[in-house]
Image 1 (cartoon, rainbow, N blue to C red):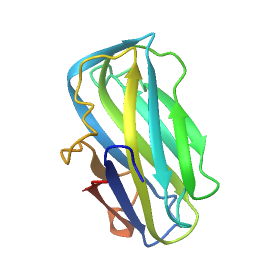
Image 2 (cartoon, helix red, strand yellow; image 1 turned 120 degrees about the vertical axis):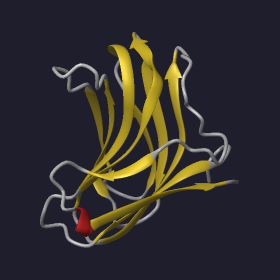
Image 3 (cartoon, rainbow, N blue to C red; image 1 turned 60 degrees about the horizontal axis):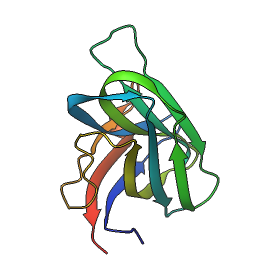
Image 4 (spheres, rainbow, N blue to C red; image 1 turned 30 degrees about the vertical axis):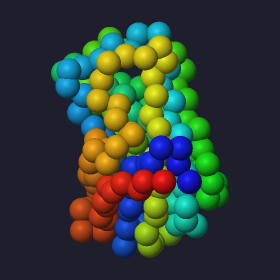
Length: 157
């Protein structure tokens, strides 16, 4: 399914009344300079239970005035999706998140992340070619953690 193996994001939603969203993210240490860079994420949504949107969120968390940048893609059906940011203007990015938002059904959703790439290339922990996938799961802000759970795994091809 994925070109060299992929991170497997599994989310189970038990109650959609509270506007559940979840994040799969990684802290970038050291921070990376994404001025004039473009980030591209290739992913595959496998199930009928899925988020309405997936956002790529990049941020400088050391700057309390910054909310970073969000690039949102609608997910109307299972299948392959390519999310590409506009050229960025972010000098000190230390957080990358995939935000799965607005689930409209309860159940388990599975997403395979094939790759996350930056052009032009910059140094950083962009390792999606081994089982050391760097993403971790967290419920979204103000979401009751008892109604949502998630795991990150790895699938080799």
